[in-house]
Amino acid sequence: MRLLSTETEDDFSKARNKALINEVQHFLNPDEATLISFSDIKKLLKPQNEVYKGMQVVPIKSIVGSEGRYKDFDNKFFPKSMHLKTRWEHIDMAHIQDINLPPISLYELGGVYFVRDGNHRVSVAKAKEVEFIDAEVVSLQTEIKLHPGDSLKKMTKQVINYEKRVFYGETGFGDVTDFWRLDFSVPGQYDVIYNHILTHKYYINMNKTEEIGMDRAIMSWFKTVYIPVVTVIANRRIMRYFRGRTESDLYVWLIKYWDELKMKFGEGFTLDQVADRVENRLRGAGLKRFLNKMAHFFFTRQNSSKIKGNQ
Image 1 (cartoon, one colour):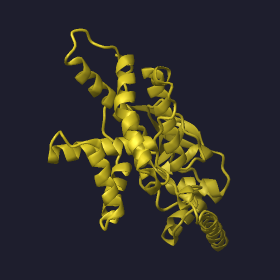
Image 2 (cartoon, rainbow, N blue to C red):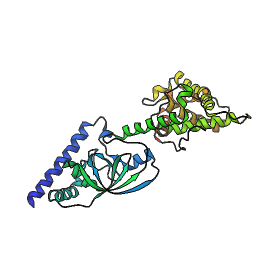
Image 3 (tube, one colour):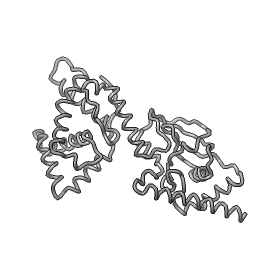
Image 4 (cartoon, one colour):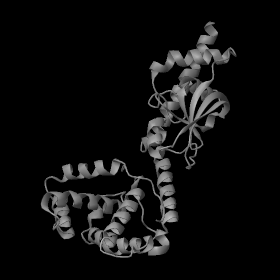
């Protein structure tokens, strides 16, 4: 028994050292070595419903995250803390003695898996280079397919690309405007743009006896709303304050900020006045507070309706 105890201690020590090495290798990009939170990815993909799949044999390499223990293990499921040692070694002991353990519980989302129960068992299995594990699976339905090994940042980019394909495909935006660079750095913004177009279409049709179609509304919004705003952003060189963001990001934020100012000062508050106010804030003593407010906006996903296509 003492020999087995020594073996499990050695196994844990090796796994813990691998976690430390992994952390050092990714010290410039620590997110790449972080186990993905199921809650974060669920908020990102917003799955529609759950389907119980029952017992399955799941590839260990497809398990990429955890519901509750994502801070305890790295992205390869190696233990990040010594407080995991006792439980980890008990699981390892059972593995060495060929003792059958209960199946783990997993969520499946986008083709990858997240641990509901059994994080230590997954960690030991990975350390032992086991390829498959028995699991009880609940699947959450989404059209987006994720890739094992991707970081949350890469998954986020994949979601944004998916949203862009859906928006361009269902609205015909690119064919109408011949503009294919409506790009964002955060998810959920294409829904915001779609709602902006619908609102623009509504106001145009208020004074018409015959309703204009979606194509004309898109072109009108693009020429009379979007282009003037991004032109101001370019002329005032506002983008230099926001590395990693896009003109379309700034468009959405500026429109929201403009609406706030019009509520405060009246509908006559012009786009140039908004730009003047932004420039003064960016150059003034309140820069840090102003940038924090904008950062909060960028990191808060918009709660808006799903894209519905041409109407």
